[in-house]
Length: 441
Ligand code: ASP
Figure 1: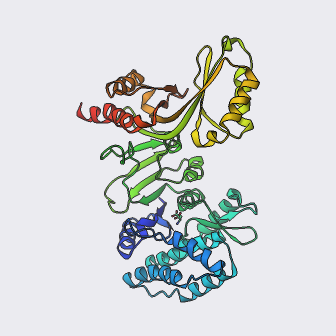
Figure 2: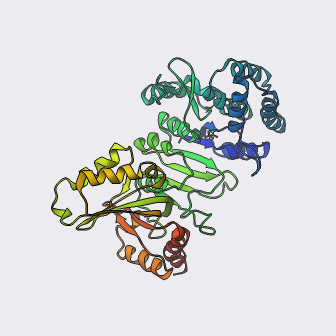
């Protein structure tokens, strides 16, 4: 059994958090490969080391004052090193970093130092080998992740290393310069390492006990999702639920390696298991609810539209011309609605309307703004009758008008459009009917 464990920034923000992570790693000998993030926030008002590094680099490379900030970054590491009683001195590393900042080594290089230094600390603390991600994670010279070269190098290298720390978030281009993934990218590194060593599970340790059925800012104390499939996760993540970097799914998914989201502050919680497919029945009919505000609808009407071959293509061609991607396209006999992100559309509003007139000569085009989309996702819906009925009766009871409904052909999700102002109430109503009511039943 081999596990890759990734610890997020809040799990490594202080000595206390480092100790919790250390205890977790030491309590299970199969936790052999560790991927740390940079130290995150210790409290709401604190700063992430990554953000401090970006700011410090910007100042240093522009020739403005940066030393104070660099010292504050140094202090973050010193606090941890001293707290852990480690025999580790980062002076040389900081001198080199400062030199490179002044030379203008790049923002990616700067940000990556957060993970690099935390990797050194973690390796010293655990007594594991330190492997610089720049030697094993590769990007091509355009900056795209090079999966093939990485997998080859990483698997060869780790084959002979029993236990190692590989810092998250960055790698190197073939020319040797440092390149990072997008923000939150240590999740991606963890997944890449898990794939390379054929891990049995990729544990992603963070500060929540897994994915929640609904956003806790909207629903009070929502339930944790015990098991979720990659497909369900993708639907929920697309609609705004976030715990894991989106790109973290792909490397492990192809290998069928499950991801286990765990809470560093509550290691006794099982967290959420993300799997390719499962026989485990979801606890409730639905797995999760997520949504986003800020959409608008373009309603097009034309008598006999249904008989006009190519109508849809011509309409969509107009959106394509302006680089606007559409989210949903519900249609009636003589009507068609295109739902798009309002902020993407607004800039081209009049040009798109004119384009539609020219392309298909409709009877009318009208716009409706300030809409929200809510995705109700669950592999359990396929086998259950009446799911849509329950959603609509819950919304009707909450006096919410449904603007649109779209059920994907996979029967994995139902998308509902409501007014922005009804968004929160709609999510609460759906949560109550499926989760609260099913717990009470
Ligand atoms: N430290 C980086 C960030 O703040 C990457 C990570 O934490 O995954 O985005």
